[in-house]
Image 1 (cartoon, helix red, strand yellow):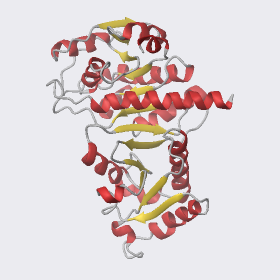
Image 2 (tube, one colour; image 1 turned 45 degrees about the horizontal axis):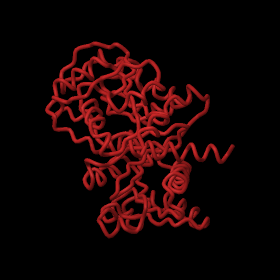
Image 3 (cartoon, helix red, strand yellow; image 1 turned 180 degrees about the vertical axis):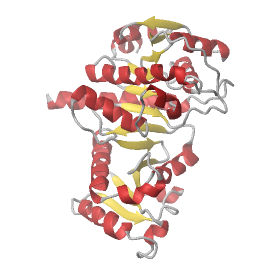
Image 4 (cartoon, helix red, strand yellow; image 1 turned 90 degrees about the horizontal axis):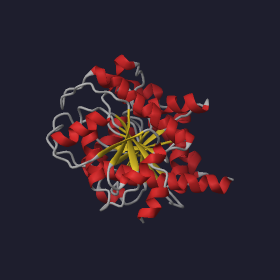
Length: 348
């Protein structure tokens, strides 16, 4: 197995917000690499910051500075490979600083470049703090949209990414993502919903090996509009789209009332829940499986996953961060990148 790992293309991990728990869960994931059978990965960011965090947290993680992804695999068993941007800005746990913003964004940009050019098989993004990034030119609503703009930079193509949150207990997709709740009704339309469902359906079949995906679709309004007495989006937008897919013999149903579709017996009837807005999707999965969920982006030319938690400034630097979501993100990125490689070979 060790020989196999040494010849595999590694995964690129971005450092994320250094004053949060991203570096901590990355360091802990490396410490648990053997028991979780993790294939090689490397971090893009600051070797100094990672080494300082390891020392502050009492983690025995040797750091090896590399200049190219292909150097990562031979070093991975005995040290954590890091592509070092030589940012040595001081930081304090729980207190983000704008001085680290260029490093955080450069790491994301470089990871996308590596994956598109074949140097890395996939990317795993550590949590970012958007407010700290605005001074460095970050103007996207979130990570997902930023990755779409970077992908276009390298390929010249437009992308319409779909965010999926996945765990063993539940998979959810918000159709509208990082927008104010008041804007959702004006953004939500049949074209957006169709595109989102198509992307999810294809991913479930091709990447998750589900031959006949079962898709549940939530309503927008309380009680799914209750016969238009509390809104008409269900009858005007959502129900017609569901009928389109039913005519294609796709197992899809709804609009469902969001307050009754996430309990255990309801979840057993579908593989993914299509939700109309951010919190409608993220509240149930974070409640059900906060420590293990993975955020993945569908509809891009790269494989990207991320822990399904934020920077957690309240516990940063205390050694309390649970690395399970990071470990799951690395494992899923590895699995999805293998699927992508197999698909490319099949097309060739």
